[in-house]
Image (tube, rainbow, N blue to C red):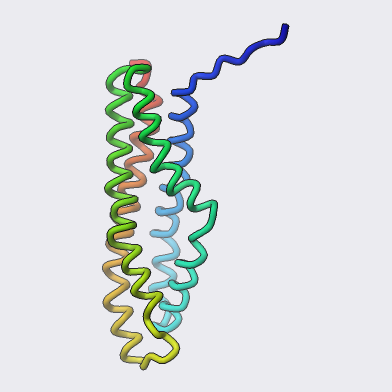
Length: 170
């Protein structure tokens, strides 16, 4: 005769979406306001070496849980909220999901990853100083611009997910 726990699956997914998107937004924001600025101060060869190191290091379970988890959990929370909560909650989650899919995942896969791959394929050890400088010039500004888009999109997506919880009772 124990107590049974009534779990609201929709709320669980909504909270998971908020947590995962918040973790990712924090990573993007932190990277944008610290790592990008620190890397900018490095000489060209050190910049490229450090960036390659970050590109390799970021591919880990912690990152993938928040990056891919948000991509999966936000739409599930949206779908579950369609009949469970009011329409404002649904539309906030739908907006968060779409913004995340396009502005974070889409920009990452469509722009940042190809730039990362080009950098990884650059023969740094055999390159001249001029080659290294040229690669940095072609890489740094576009990568940072796309990252800024991802940062803004992830923060707004996170905010919309939070608002969906706050506004669900209206």
